[in-house]
Length: 196
Image (cartoon, rainbow, N blue to C red; front, side, top):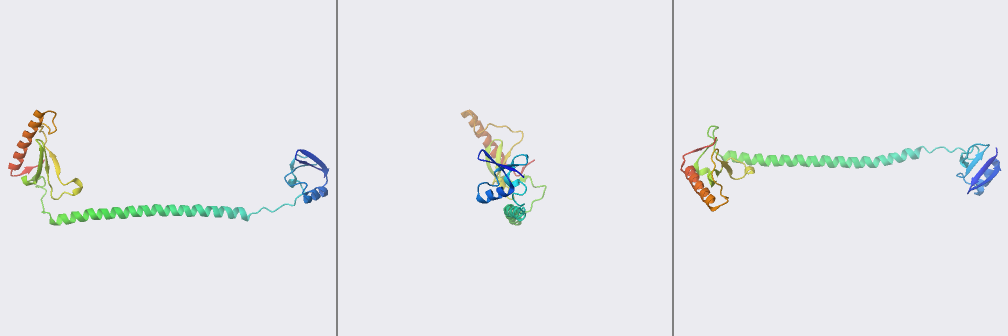
């Protein structure tokens, strides 16, 4: 077999296998140098038959590396899952505590509040009127109302339209004051107030 070697832009040879082995041992050629044998195409010298013995492919190393690489994302994925589960667990516990707090306050108020029937639910007494804002709006205090809705509830009279307290002129403001006084007198003088 006649082998030509191409190295550093120059072509050497022809050489036989014995000479190539001697040059490889001496370091004159390397397995990455190009070689052409018996008129074939140029290939790496290490790929020429009879030059380098076939090396067994390392099977254990490629298998071992992906195993190590997969272990790290698995740990990271486990950590993310634990974080998500912990977050939802904290959310559920917080909601349960908030619900217990809100329901517990309602239970205490129900124990002390007088029992009212459904018929009298929207019947108020004049002492429940807290404030008359203007001629068509007043505020009431409901004893069984949760503070979430505020201490006082605003009621607007249906079909009544009076000047607003924030009127544009002094005359409008004076009329609003008169309307407020008339509404306050009517509410305070009533024996009962029905809401419909």
